[in-house]
Amino acid sequence: MLKLCGDTQDKMAHELMLFELTIERDVVEPLYNLAEVEIPNIQKQRKHLAKLVLDMDSARTRSETVLSIILLSSSDRAAHYLHRRLEFYQSTKSSGLSGNLQPSGAKADHHREEMEEAANRMEICRDQLSADMYSFVAKEIDYASYFQTLIEVQAEYHRKSLELLQNVLPQIKAHQGEVQTDTHSSPTDSAAAFGEFN
Image 1 (cartoon, helix red, strand yellow):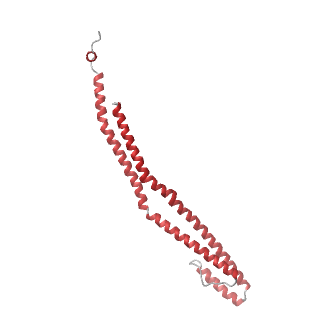
Image 2 (cartoon, one colour; image 1 turned 90 degrees about the vertical axis):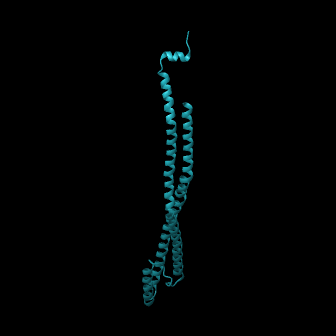
Image 3 (cartoon, one colour; image 1 turned 60 degrees about the vertical axis):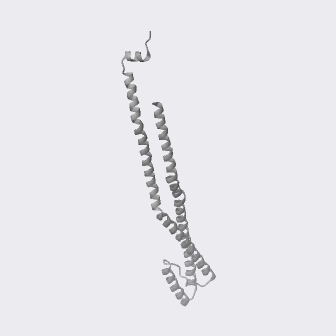
């Protein structure tokens, strides 16, 4: 009986090992890649985009400041013209950069170019982040399938373990019944079985 129980435990340990290897291969490794590579990359890009937005806003503020200074230092007619251009520029800055606004002065040109470069870097980062997030969302079905696989593999493991136990249980009960029958026999039967002690 002990050999039967030991063999059963050995078979159950084998099933457990197969279960753990399958879970590692089909569920844990893909989810590890998701948790340790894809999600951190998206978070890193979001932080980088936030920094680029701040850089672009700083460049825009510097450019507007230089334009305001130019506006204050020029003649009335030029000031009126630049003021109207500034209003036009400010009205279009929410929808993008105005490429036809070219304030006078090298410093103003430098700040305008700096602002355009910051805006371009921000747009590139935003596009990359959008592509990565789209890719992540497109794989949602795959991620859900990992959890479905987990449930299916668990169910199969428990099904096989139960089958092993149900197959061995009648044999254990039958053996236990034989042992109980032998222990409940009469003393004369036992003496006859072991021979007479004279």
